[in-house]
Image 1 (cartoon, helix red, strand yellow):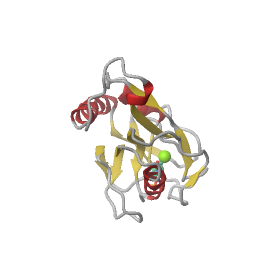
Image 2 (image 1 turned 90 degrees about the vertical axis):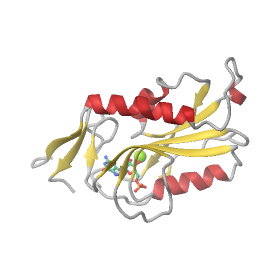
Image 3 (image 1 turned 60 degrees about the vertical axis):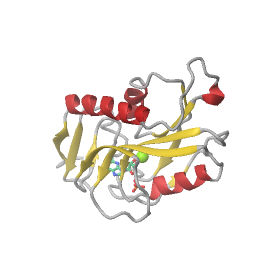
Amino acid sequence: MSGARERVLIDEARIAQRVGALAEEILGGLAFEPRSGASERDALVMIPVLTGALVFTADLIRRMPVPLSVKPLTIQSYPGRATSSQGATLRDPVPGGLSGRHVIVVDDILDSGATLALLRDRILEQGPASLRICVLLRKLKERAAPVEADFAGFDIPDEFVVGYGLDYDGLYRNLPDIRVLEGVG
Ligand code: 5GP
Ligand code: MG
């Protein structure tokens, strides 16, 4: 880790403001009216991609005052000290029971698109009523896999970032802001 430098790209206040706006965008775009007092069956299903989307999802869902359930899964695409995608692998089974449900996948960052393309296809096999993809960050680059985010917090340059849930070799997830990590990888 010696030689690594951190440069703040997006500070806490900007993240908080944008996460609130994203929650409103998502709620405004819902293709159905989740009933208050709805059973789990009628609720929106949020699928956070762990571990990176942990912090973002925690903040986002607290800005969404509608019935929703959370069904996380873990995907690893940047093992250890890798700073470029090594291909996505599903470590957990994709949550079941999504047929006829309104599903929102929440991820930290859209990079090559491999992770979200894989997950999207697995979810679509179950026949959800709708499927939306929400990412906090979207790297401006060409994607290896054809996948678009329906909701994106910030477009960022193609640099390796950490903080607010994103790690390098397991560390930095607890930074309150998003920083570019220079001098690694
Ligand atoms: P993709 O499959 O789109 O290439 O990669 C998506 C996953 O790779 C993200 O969910 C995230 O976990 C990881 N990732 C991609 N870019 C970065 C980055 O700049 N920093 C960190 N920490 N993780 C990244
Ligand atoms: Mg991830």
